[in-house]
Length: 221
Image 1 (cartoon, one colour):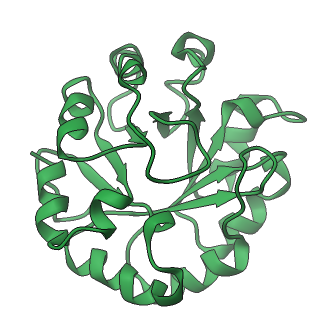
Image 2 (cartoon, rainbow, N blue to C red; image 1 turned 90 degrees about the horizontal axis):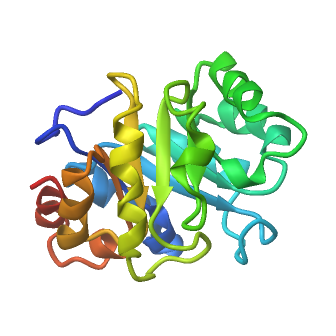
């Protein structure tokens, strides 16, 4: 699932939350041709986070127009109800929030995601400490550390959140992904990768750039 564009083993996953939704295919092709490794798709329900974005039909449509793996981030309540639908829509990675898991326990939900042949991710919000998920770190395929409060793009990077990365990295199995999302640019990316992150989600920094290929490459430096 990793791209041949990788430099320093850093995966760049542009967030389409910052794309022009009236020209979504155009913007997806821009980042694909510029060397993006994955495509980050933020799904928000207006309940778990104070914003509403896209759902299964859009993910299914995106799958038809890109060869990039779809890195789908479910910022929704009751994610267990929607795992099968998003897996069927073409998600390659499904990341759920530790704080949103209700009916299912965390390991059961991650196992359910994996049962559909999809990589299972677990995300934590800024106020959640990594010790709270320590028993799942080496089971999930991906751990996503939010470095802003989830819900909207364009927020400022919270430096304290980056401190969680070393703890998580030291407990991950080889071949797992440690992802960060929120306020990522060429400066904050370096802070995160030095602490062990190997997957970077960036929205505004990439989609508002005059040179998308250069911006993507700078994240890997």
